[in-house]
Image (cartoon, rainbow, N blue to C red; front, side, top):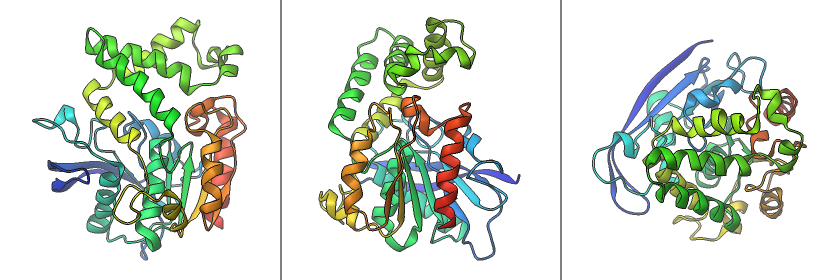
Length: 324
């Protein structure tokens, strides 16, 4: 598989909510070969706390993001620790919205690769929010999107969940204590009650529930800088495809303005990006389809690395969308 990594220099970026991100940059990775007509591009934005290395497992010939057929670009979100973030940018870091992310991702595709239209934007969780923004903001430039365990606007209950995470991190004695607390809070939200009742963590190689919490969840967040996570959490809480001059806060108008084919793919047991959010969005979409992942893996069903059953379901649904 042909791959390449690089950095797109955005320059001094005037932000949607005011302020400037000095010397803004997006770290990205590409997989596969761009076709002569530049018509085989799939954009695959990162999710909360993720680097491209955390999600690239799906970019394989045996999965739906097949690099032998498509040119796949993973742009790392601002605030994720690789692209411009509090941990690698001097001074006070400004508030960055999803709008700011996707407008610069579009510049990246146009200026580096001469791409003005994408075959699909595929996103899970915060990546799904970015996919939704692409479709709402860029109209004819987007053929398809996959909203995998995501929503057009962060729901109130989702916002409250994140407030709990924020408070735990900010009130901790040390950044490391905050990240450990964050991991334990997240563990209860990202996976379903049934997952824990059945002790399914044993199938992942953990010897006890405590072992799972420490070596999986605490360890996952201890890899990151708390400042980056708090900045990205703000972006998540303020996710809204209608919060811009084009739609002026009218969410129904923003949904109706989407021309792309939309696959809404929530998990049946997701505790914060719920299927009901997508059910409310569906009637306003011109070309929308909702297919629920029948899983007990909660939010993690949408990123089923090491979960072959859910991965096969996701692959089948996305391949059907790509062939439509």
